[in-house]
Image (cartoon, rainbow over all chains, first blue to last red; front, side, top):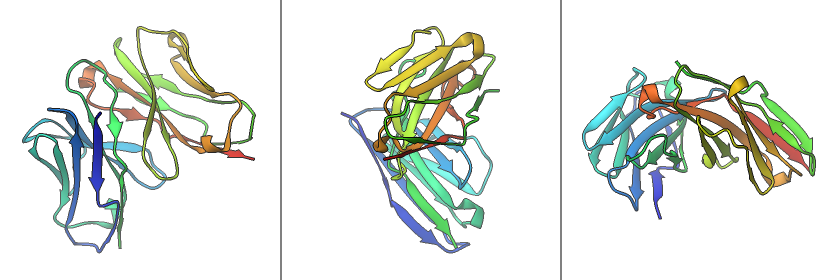
Length: 114
Length: 116
């Protein structure tokens, strides 16, 4: 069966510091991968998605970036965090074949920028 | 553009009551998928159900049931005989053909509080 893991689960970072959140999927090949953010009091927003190694699509311009160095690895980064980057970050995946396949989410990472 | 509206911000019920969570969606696509996810206090989004736009059959899974009506663009979720463990935030979401089904558009969620 497929599983998804992301880490760290929680982190507190000062403004201006870098960020790296990592996500890996097991049990599937060539998944579509996603990063979502859930800010306090707001809904879930798609940040990036990837359909293959090195292929990144950005949905929202911001100071975050994403990379996919390996087939089942997806990384969310920032060079300098802003207070507004605080939130709950969720990695997700789905199988690439077919349409409208279910997107499954990881456990999430709570980021507090202070 | 797609939009999902969950007008109920928070619902409080007493255990064993039935509760319906409303979801209204907007899309110009004829091919789309609708989803419900549950977010318990731990934060993880748990998939509950997926329906495609060509299948309006209602579905029942244990105490959960879903009513999909294209005529009113609604995809409502009913929990029968609610339990304390049902307390969570529930999200309705949509993905449509014009985004290659890559983008899940979420509603703002409905927080369900079930008290003993």
